[in-house]
Length: 248
Image 1 (tube, rainbow, N blue to C red):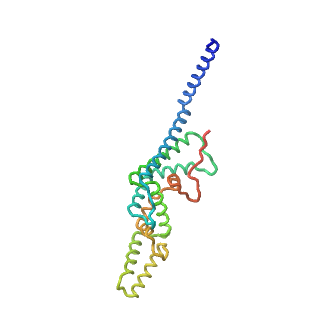
Image 2: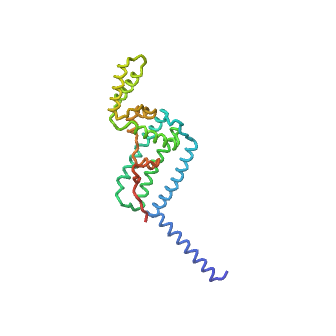
């Protein structure tokens, strides 16, 4: 190799090293560290997605033919919701505080903060599903079935005492040997209670009857809409689940 060629190669090598050192210095700075952190978090999300896929395979779920919820699985679903509730509310509060009509949030700091919240919520959700031997598909099914049952129950005020009285009256009205006038009086009282509770005159479906027994707990365990959108894709009125974050 001629001397001129050797010098040119040496210069190119030095320039390459300088470029690498400059890039390293940039990435070791504040902005570079944020970019590296953001990249690492994106990689972690990919791993989390694979964990959800593995959980679905470990606990496959086929909806029952009659659509009836099992009480033990409803209780497992409620325990999952109750356990992830704190992280879900924290995530929802952050989303609401950053969500302004038509405004875009800028900056790596906002993106990193958002991803940390998402990671915390998704991690809690994944751990609770595992603890209750429940795959994402079964969770979504119970969520939807419970919502339908609550709609069937209506939104009228209903206390535990109301439901106990209604159940007792319905049972008494079906007793054998009851005189017709007495049966008619009980059936009238049953209808009065059902009207007060905002129920239709039709008999409750098994899922609605089950939901009625746990109505207060179901309502208390309900996750914010922003968290539901993230975990299961459920939306309310087509509302966005969070702010738009633009990275410059």
